[in-house]
Image 1 (tube, rainbow over the protein chains, first blue to last red):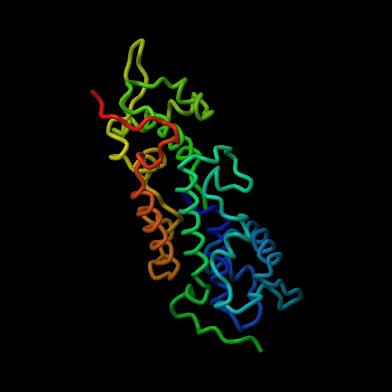
Image 2: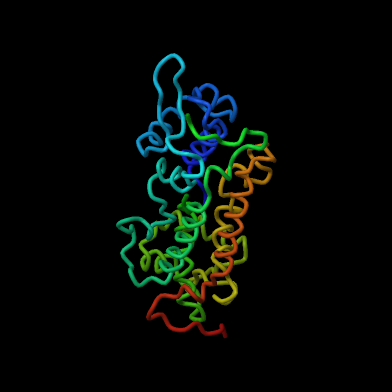
Length: 141
Length: 141
């Protein structure tokens, strides 16, 4: 049971944006440098995050990325599902399920666990994930 | 976020043994047939389950596999960790962690989620996962 590499990297990258919220765009080079992330892969992940309206790409000389909303308005669940799709812990939690045994008692177990995982991730906001020492997020001008 | 394919198959396979607990060894052919599982892969997984003393391999003409303990004495967590190793939801939950930022606020989030997942899986016993219509497990002679 583990987080996908895509989700792992996206979360680490977006936390850098949350740390810099209100300071204007942050370059991909900065994001990757702070968290030791692979730039090429992060471009793909951030384009998925932009598609989900979680980050905004700013073009131009002083361009980069910034959060589309305040850190307290973005949950870990949104970030994870934006890059790995809806969480499906196992075969029977896919939509449609990859197993057709509707009366299987295991399905209830996985459904309950999946609900718990989604609830927990949905309750964590980026504002709770700021690096220690990062400035408190300020609303954008 | 998802269960490894190894754990998915091991759980599906061992539930067949739980359904047949007290009836003597079940052949791999039966296990695979009931749940449409790939035989070659299941041999490897069941050797890991045997190493963890969750199943016992019985040799001979009427051989096969049986649970080493009663279904109520085996948890889903044991089965999963026997085949995929200790659950590590992400980089920082590895032992030792694959990320050295000890003060990262994300680490606390993942630690709490991992604890919840392990607790939930540790609370589900195979006796709760028996197929509907399967005979109630009888103690072995």
